[in-house]
Length: 556
Image 1 (cartoon, rainbow, N blue to C red):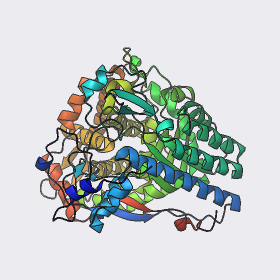
Image 2: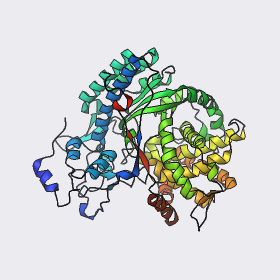
Image 3: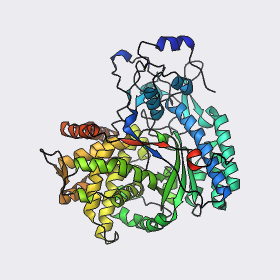
Image 4: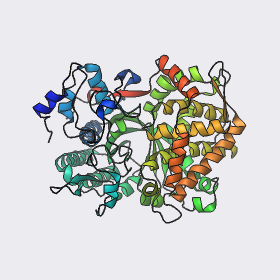
């Protein structure tokens, strides 16, 4: 399965600098020598241990959790192969400096995911925007011209045949051995599940892994309500494919439901149809209605694998992504409470201390951070999934820009929803200013993910839109920010309209123009971000995780 790097290729990669390592990932036309190599910086990630008190669970449940972790580790291997290549293990072992090897492991390759994919190992060249989903010498024009039915599908690799022509290889064929092993583990876990509904879902998901037919398992997952243990597993998000945004990457989360917090969240899903009707856009852009089976739950996550563990770590999930499932059933919103708490304490609070005006610092709270994140996920269900002018789905029309547009929409509509529900008296005794100021601090947190990250790009666009519309004020002397609450309301409505219309129109050129003009970091903002680096504030978190951290090493 794993290919060794040929000795001559390895020898050619060695230089006097021990940091140099091998990669065949640079396209043939890249001038490698002209590309600046940055320093590896594993210190930007704060360590956090994923653990939980499992004494509440039965022996069978604990064994099931261990099996789900084992299946997740297979997703980890598959994501490495999609992100870098089949030779990743020997490549990692060849890196001679521990700091660089650690950072390569954190980044699933030699490119810094939180610094625009800049290379941190000499000689590797630029990261192929299509990762390892496509031949590295393939151009967009060649792909567009190729007659390949299903070529925009999510679950296949593009490769060259013996004649050099582009061809499709379905995931379930390319990764048959690994996927069969993962499916077998899910079947074992199903036999131990106390919830019959969850056991059935695991069996359907196992079948999906070995067939690339995920819709039925997605539909069924929407109806699974009685399970305290959950798993999200398979090829799901398309962020890794920055060439077209078509291919889904393997990932997994193993989750334990927080029953108390989930009960508090359940009622908010009921407001989705009403909130859709109130969107600040013409009727044509809100003609779809989200499914009524959407639910909100809080979880502690005990294992991340693959795409979910790459770069900026996910702290909330909105799934399934399938547009037909969303329209029929809605989505499930999973808030990852322990990971969220880690980012709040280790990153957001220190950022607020440096960049938020002293008079407004009191408005930064975990409850507001949790709610902003939660409503971001809820907001994915608003707007339209299909363009209003026959260009197909929004994802197809906006291609590689679809993810950043969708993340930007969800961020701003989350704040729109909080405002609307607060005005309607549905948010209890909360202080609306808490959400606005915490949201502002959150922009600085996410901007630091860089232009290669969909959330990072979305936050740059939003920051500049707020700047242009005077939604905040920056004190030139202190470099601290304060929110103008009246103008912030106006900016929320204006940006919501802009992003929803771009999506509904499938306006690729307009989305590209928005990213080109507003998805940039100005000099003042860069100065402020440098202050966060100088204060040694982490950019994100990395996990100590696995069977040992959960005390499951003896459970087989």
